[in-house]
Length: 92
Image 1 (cartoon, one colour):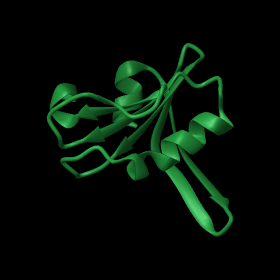
Image 2: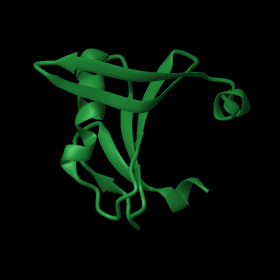
Image 3: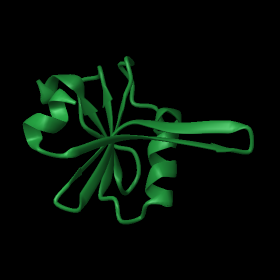
């Protein structure tokens, strides 16, 4: 809630169960009709499998702009056309 109040955005999460598998996104921020999804992982490598929840979210909500994997690595990486891995250090 603190993050959402600082940037004056609505904060949500996403969880979908399909075929016995749950896909989720840690944070979904909506501001001025723009939607972005965020998944946080303590991993120094950006892995495609860590982005499955983001990809599922973007498929379910095509109006969303981007998905971001926040991780402990050291470089920005493009995972898919709309999913990027961003080092935690760049956010602090």
